[in-house]
Length: 237
Image (cartoon, rainbow, N blue to C red; front, top):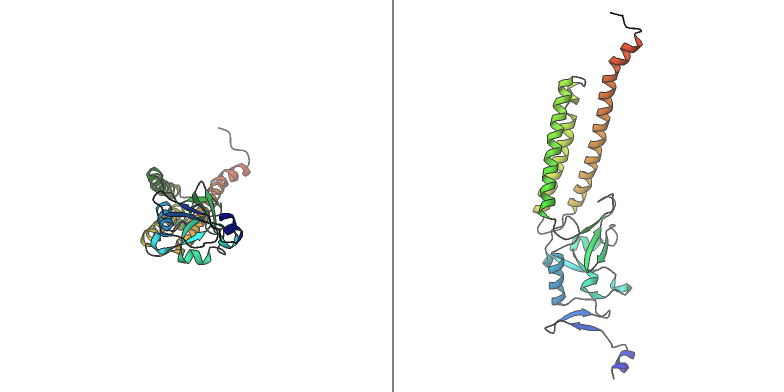
């Protein structure tokens, strides 16, 4: 009897949980059960796109391997994505990979030039503390460098504060990004991804600018010595 039903195309694999709830459906069903949605909410905690804070009840279940391409309606093939992200996930350059039952997301080049994959696991508190300390140390060192350059008198007045400008711009970008991320509780803040890109570009540009400043300072310090050498032999005492 079961063989006859399978040959007739009416077979669908179904996996039940301990209490009789459906947790696995075969490819003939595209939509998800309430139990599956709860499991996804517990695992993903909301939209899996980095920088998005949309809660689970405002997301859509997205097949990692498309249902039209044979992807199963199982929780190990599905992630939660907000409405804005789900509408453009196929064309925006985001790539989702399931590893050991958990989603890993790789953003487009504009989001992260390193194309690294991110998990939706919460960041360890120690890592967050390190981020704060790192930002504070960078800004403090920039102020010290600015004061040292000002004391040397080798650079015109408007440019002696370049290190402080660079550190201030990076700190402002980071602070604004943090405020926007915390405030985006009801929708996907696509602007957050843009801010991450701007922050990365600001850090790279600041590093290059500081390097150029170091070259200028070295050249200014070398000129008096070179002039003395070209002046000829020094008088003997």
